[in-house]
Image (cartoon, rainbow, N blue to C red; front, side):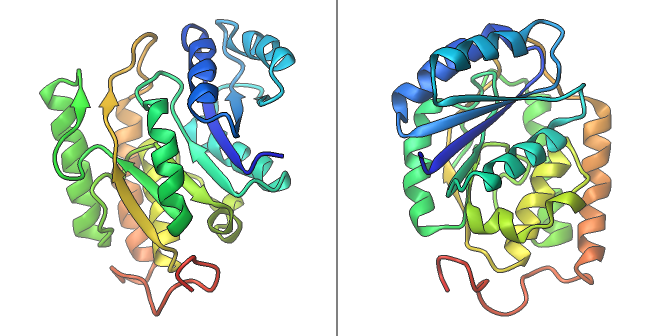
Length: 250
């Protein structure tokens, strides 16, 4: 079995999934893909089933309805942990995350527990975003850092590679957030536990087709979640002690 799994949540992404799976498996043939579909009304799930029948590296997890990005990833993580994958990616379905970045992130994961694909390491690498969206994203990163101490440039980003030990440590059944707040909560939890987290540069391009899932509710949830994380850690803004016993640095 392959050691790498790339998890892709889908909801109405029929226009993207075929091209995405072909590109991902071309640039990273040693990986498997798991699509987590929330009963897409546009037939995404049915198309994914067809693709999985002709390609053994593609797997599909069907859920009963739209439950949010965080819930989709939790289901995907649990599926991955049951099947002994060592490197587990998060990736969007809309090509905003360039599949050609996967080999570099996988290489970085050889010496890190969690690799964050950052749009802002050494400058801004975002294509086709309005200035208002860029300001919101950069402002969110600063907001998270000021309150929680999280020292990474892109805490709301969703292009990541976890080592298995991180996901085994985090109590996934207690993670309740979705959207931006899910990304912040997962990274913060891993960092505060003493795992080695790094960010590497990626280029982000606004989706090629389909509709954005961004909403005011997602932003509001992230605003509140940051404060919850701070209080959860007893107002600490840095990890306690040395590396986690299962960190690559231990």
